[in-house]
Length: 171
Image 1: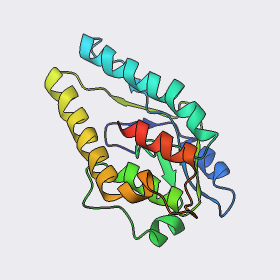
Image 2: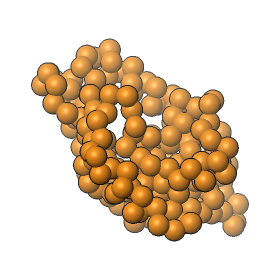
Image 3: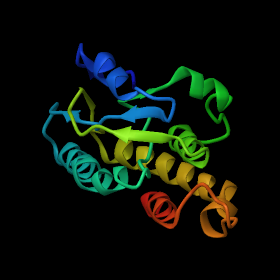
């Protein structure tokens, strides 16, 4: 969870109910921005997040191609240990971990339920700084995993739909 987020008291309990098998590695909830100033940048960021989580992640979850967003997710600690933790080289370490989880064949469940709220970017500078970091991170992931994403082995753990959703989620 990000430092500017306030989670619902039942967030962890709800997440743990979904991590009910060895196959489920993580649970992702939507990122929701709370209304602060109501300025146009905040409205844009809020709309973008709503589209990503209300529309973008819904079909992904049916194909086990949920992008891990870090904020508002719970990760099975055993799986995190097995994966040797977060990728310190990546500006999008959460998404990179999600891809590594998918490459093992484990699931990331998306639960479309508001379990917390955080602060949206308030200025053009903050908005583009955040997006630049996300883009830089996505490009780094695609460069590191280009063979798995674009030229997979015959016995790849990622199917065509998963590769499609991961790549287009980062573009």
